[in-house]
Image (cartoon, rainbow over all chains, first blue to last red; front, top):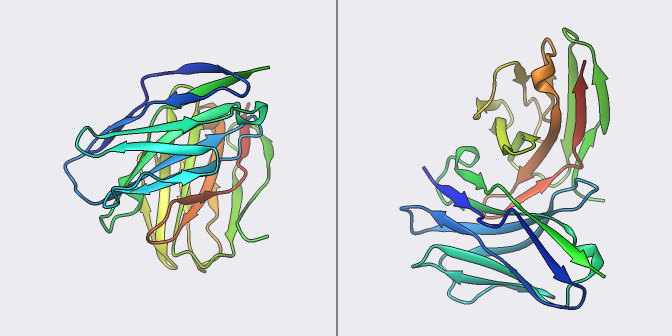
Length: 117
Length: 111
């Protein structure tokens, strides 16, 4: 079974600075998707960024970018020019390409990010 | 707005009561699921459905029931509420090559 690990339970960053959240995963599959979700205090789960494993190019969404290292099974999220609104719990997630959608979507335990003014 | 609509946002139940959490999506997604989120335990899959008329159990199905009569709707029923079911519940839907779109969540307290 796949597992997702986020080794940093909490992190903090100064406003306007850059922060990187770590995520590693374990799988024997070659085709899969990786995601970062943001959960602010409102508790809404918001998709931040997604990466297909077959793509070598790292995904980017405005101030959010990832460093996807397939061989190392690493998928870190970089937030540039951090803003107060970035404060949230961030979840890394893995999704298999297999047909059984539900059983193959795995979330990490989350990293709580604080942004200091 | 397109997305997943989940109701209610908050609910307090007495032990033994039953209730239904509603979930509807307007994106024509075949796949829908219910998760519960508890402190220190992350998101755990309760039930899921790969299309109308098809449902299956996830990691923590006991005490919950689901049905999927239409593509749009996927209600979650608590049969006899217990304090252990106090949690935040999320409904989500997904397209075949995408990630989840989540509802806004329901905070349920069972006293």
